Image (cartoon, rainbow, N blue to C red; front, side, top):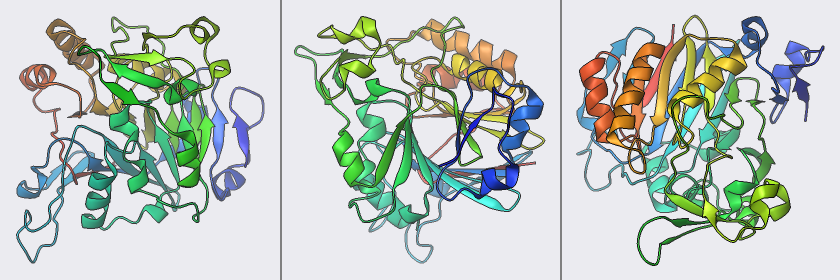
Length: 368
């Protein structure tokens, strides 16, 4: 596999860079100039919702907007869309992206959803072949984002697929901070991932995937946003203590700070950044700012994903996030998953022309 150090003096030849057969990654250890990161600019980007909580899409019209087409799922047009099989939703998130640059198409899976059954059902109804996926990103180690992975690949016979994870913490056992005793949220099984064909790559630093998708690496807490995560983590349970921060290794249980969480983003030609903040435990504003710092590009075309403006965050924080997003002024905001209705209602009041609702099966096609 080829690697590129964008903070050094040499860039990999572009033709060789884009021609790598499996995955091309780059460590982005510093902020970049716009000229440097335009090496990864894409012509088009499609985001398809494979798993989320809302399923109203088949009854809505498609939309054509500046720089965006919204294409609703049309499942089996010759029979009622809700019978006998239907797209199903749950409290999980899985997105399939397909980007294109100079005739090269790259398909990246971002998160696996909650349950294998839901994933298998939706993939079948949407006629998506998992074998077409080139690489995957797991935003963080919560069950509603990793639980569905057996629904994509159930055997080890396929080629190895790179799976980018933000750190060893993704594999630690977690407990929810509700109930007495608190519910056990389980662990992400690294051996099961290997059996399913995934080649796990820890990427705490920002990285480039297949020459087109970028990850943020660790997201600094630089805005008003705090790390607000309703789980606790058990170091050494499911994860290797040696791979954790020294201050966390010898604790039996500690509040989860989401330090390993990643956001994914694209640089869209003539439009700016598309930032996918899957759950935003480190803050959606912080995620956007990190993407801007890495890319050297301030213009944001779209912000996509779960913004986690539910407890332990407050309604005040939700409204403050709306104000900060309005100042950043993205063209579109696509709230999903754990965003919360307080944010959505306030955002619809403040900037209604920017909010696009999302449903299972919806495809968002971004292009100039």
